[in-house]
Length: 112
Length: 113
Image (cartoon, rainbow over all chains, first blue to last red; front, side, top):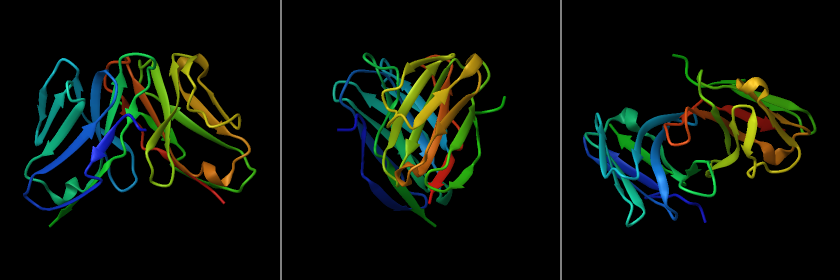
């Protein structure tokens, strides 16, 4: 199955609330990246977290990585309507390939 | 600094025709990737260039797809002849090194009718 799997598949919240998305993967990784896709447009890079890091912040974004559980989470605080998008994680495996492997994505809807 | 640019943004072609997609990576990025998303499903890897060399083309669906990166700068992805199932959004990405941020372009939405 796919290396990365996000859950939930879809999430609907009110503006101002926090949104948490999770990503699980199967193999050892060098890093994990989170991306946002708005309305079928391009993939916007949000944050990269390396395998030796446990947490990173960027503005309203907080990403955690637990390599023992092979999982990552993306937290968006104080969500805005403009955060409505699909969010994907992409992992960079340590061996066997130099490609980034995407998860299935979480569709986030922030209601105004 | 310019990001990854893709051309065209949209393409509608008839089954059996040929289409060529172009990707200009970020200057100085040796790694260039092609991905596609079909019918809103997962984003699937197609191939990976390091400079002008194909590092991994295991995701290319079949021999109707041909990717090139002459001179190690821009890349083209040609689909010939196009089939209905080739419809989707084709993304290009580039990164300086494998273990660094990969930046994506806006994608080319290909519709085969």
